[in-house]
Image 1 (cartoon, helix red, strand yellow):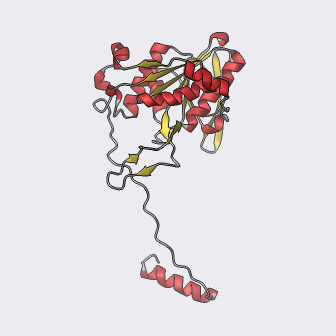
Image 2 (cartoon, helix red, strand yellow; image 1 turned 180 degrees about the vertical axis):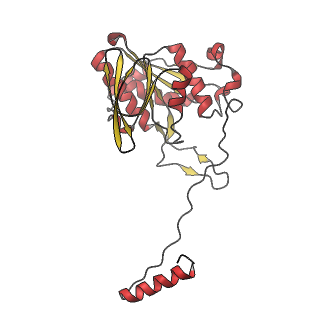
Image 3 (cartoon, one colour; image 1 turned 30 degrees about the vertical axis):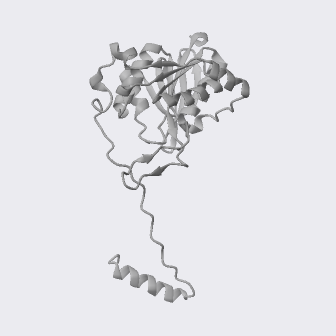
Length: 266
């Protein structure tokens, strides 16, 4: 299998969180004018896939579900060295929660074919860590989450996964899915030749009509989403504390005790 191994990496285009702000009236993210990047965990997973291809051969395909402008993320993945790219994009997909998103992506993966699927552990704009495992459940394949090392041994993957303050070494037969931590690898830099090649490659775009034979419209979009996000909000800033300066230790203790008693803490 090694020379023909087909690795599919799921990536997501996300807003750069360093630039994201919340609309104080609506509580929603302000995305206009905010630069987008490939989700960090996904990019680490892509680099791991490229390293596996260099070691054992095969192909690396990238898949992204999103609006038409998500092709920028796919171009970056191609520039890093991916062989081909698929964009799953349709109005019918809009408003999908993690379950509906996983349903759409899993449908695309069945059509593409795979031996190993790699996703990021979680996306920085949602932090649910649900889509990867849900894709595996939809595909009915084994999954290993929180991968910090990844290798191939014959028709199996060998994964070192993080678990709380421990690590587990697992060997799992393919086909399977692995969710990657950003610590898994350090993504490579793109070179000029790779960027030029990326913009000369064709990205395959699949809409609802391309997947409808295996995709029930009742399972996707807002209609097919069991959950909805009603509001996002940031933490309220903490009020400034009181500085006790120029007091002796005894005086400072008296002041603190008085405040604690006044607030019924003690």
